Length: 517
Picture 1 (cartoon, rainbow, N blue to C red):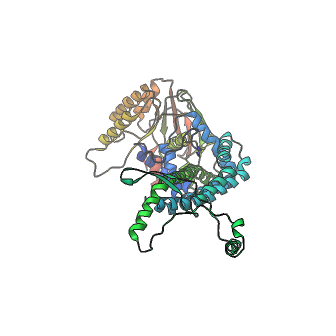
Picture 2: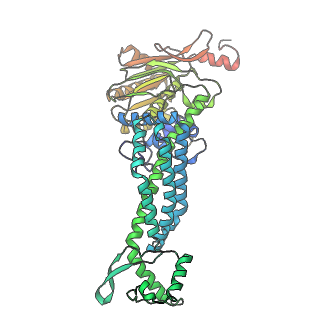
């Protein structure tokens, strides 16, 4: 059995390592806020979600759309999906409690624990089968239909009844029937386990019949004489004999014990995969409910091929900011179709970094199959996402801030590929305007020449003006809007870079007077 709720033709590997830039992405995009909101206290969901968002960063359009279809059905039927998730949790937790029995590798112990474990799993399989019969018709997507069809085919009533029958047989309540050949030194070899002898519980009428057998005249006409049996018994104090008999028994049931243990492991792994893959969608539903409660819009984005170089959005906002604020956050619009570079400038505290983070979060969420925080969002998929944000001074650094920035950029260049996306936030501000602008200009130009998309927030006027005056057709300039008097709207509009960041506005807001007062 296969879950296949994250990939069409394979299970999700939750053991895959996070990408090397995961720590920087988590810090710069404030992903911890997003992950905690998705988990809502469920530690398992909290462990799975970063794996899907970061390690499962998808580059295949079909897989992204596959997950979107599944997610839409989840959002349409959240209570039903949560019920299925609870069933998967119940199965995996039960398996975890019983797993210690498999540490004993003697076949008879393995068989005993496997029977107990499989018996528990059969009960849960019955629940899953009943769930499928009740709810399969509610889901409209082809992906969920295929999932339920697999369950119907593999968890039929005949299959469940067959498993129950074999578990009864494997208890060997009528004894174990073995055959063997004699090998060198009359040692047993080629042990074969046979169909167990029939077992009848001793009911009162069977005991009465056995009693009458010895009393009735002419009893030999009614009770045929059986072929004589030859047997022996072991004294209860004969420990060596008992040990030898156990070893003989283990020789015969070893294959059956291993087969049953593997079957139990297969069913256990199915429920484990189902829980893991559903945990991602449960996280999405948790996030959706919180945003809906705040009146914050979301949409299923439109991912396009990697070489189309598209980026446009309406009402895009920072989902992490929305989760931590009581009022609705401001959304932004932009059309960066066929643009390789988006240069964001303008007034301090005007929403530049927030927009940059919004784009990064939306790209991540889109490429793992999630909805995004916007009225609409369309973007080309990318090979990888990198962030290069300014860092606070670290007293333990071996070198200066500029060296540290250059080293981080070197790592990005080493790992970047054509069609990656890089988010730059006040990069190379650790030196003066002229040097910082020159360094940033050369690096950005090299990234663009390598077909890497760049979204850049900067207060370096020479840097922004240089790209503006170069009349590049593949550059979009956005500027933080500032109203007369210094009020920030937190809207980003198309506009050429200005020579000032209006720091005097901040001075006045803090000290209550103009800077020239």
